[in-house]
Image (cartoon, rainbow over all chains, first blue to last red; front, side, top):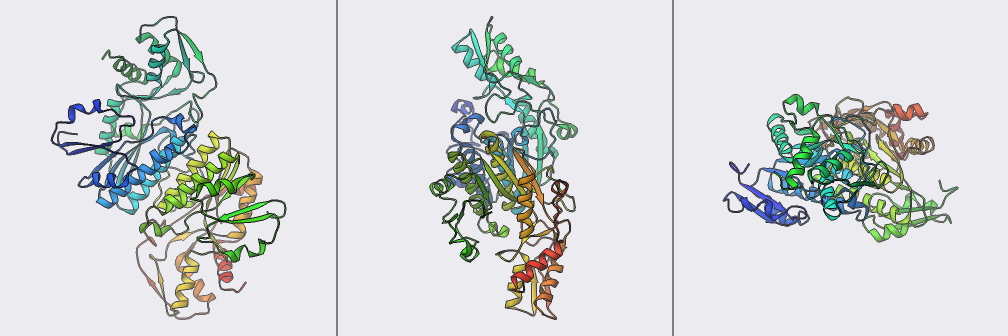
Length: 292
Length: 292
């Protein structure tokens, strides 16, 4: 994107890191603003003279809202409102939003297409994503904006700062004899490598032009948590690791144990994930371990 | 409800009026708290020792958010979050929420059932209702609460402080020769009298017991805005009133011109509206004019 565009990156580095952007810093068409989306005037100023917003910010830790119930309200809903207001006040018309499968709630092995309903999220994370979709949709209609909303599978890659793979690596580095697994290990979801996620988003923008465009983005395969645990153990070269399950079907309150995203719409448009969920997790795992 | 229960009414009177509750004030099991839901400590204190919340508060003026974009964010989303937090902190487990048809967005003459999707609202009002449904659903799952969510038709009655019928009465009182109608007058929606709305809500609570219960509530008939205008003119005893249309299909930005709610679920449970939309509007009209 940096080849043909002037890009402002606005981040409070709550989960991002400076090292991820170091190689861009010297480029004349790149600007980094270290600020918080909760600070309205900063967002408004940063948005000046732009024409496309990639709104990727979110609290990344779903379980954390149990201790801090206003976390997703602030880091999800309020920051999205600030982004939309900054767009309105600056006449910016296009916005990408990274929603998530959490808006669908817990519907077992049902494949949820983009028109699935009712949307009854289990977590503040899911509720916040649903709320933001609604706010963005309203702004698009009221202020003639256009949006591409992506409801994502679990995204993995070398820069991830959260997620089960990294969690297992960290736990095994502390104790290579035993691995605690939240829940019963049977939670089964789709994983997509970040490179393919970016590819899918750019593809969707180029191939759809409604006022509000909504896409599920996932690989069409699934992997359970115990399989990921075994993959991490294998790639770390460990043996005889005892798997210790905390039990119950959910990893934490608000966790959706089974996620099945119907990706027919984007598949028919011409994009399909090349890597299976297992391949995506393994690639990210090798990257996280510094093997790739 | 006051016969068998202790009731606290919490209201900032932004659209309610003291005269509506004057006849309850002397009752020993009734308490009125004049306060704002945005004041967290007040909400929390008021909620003590209660076991059921009827969360009816909302910005009632959909078009107003065009001038004041944070209106529904504050009066919808933030107050609902405060209500949920007050419930969590006080161990209150049951909540009624009055959502609205606005969450369905603009889907023309499609009859929207409770599982309709995608939910892409056109207004901040609709976005706020959708957001609040999501927050309530998340709290129900995370903190073992139970909810009844009602997606309402247009509710009319003698105490209404907004809405097309009252709007026409006020305009005709100012100028009995000419009536300005927002849009083309063909906006067609379902209207339900407030007495039947309350009846439907109480019926639904008694006849459903899921964690999250969602119901459309409407009469199964529709009336357009020009017909309402003619009804108001007739009931006010006026003649030769010129109807002046502002034009366009929508009354205002964010207005959904055609609303069709599928009420099969509550109908099958055993509740049906007795009054048609026309009868409901006429009854409210007579009440507003002091004829009934």
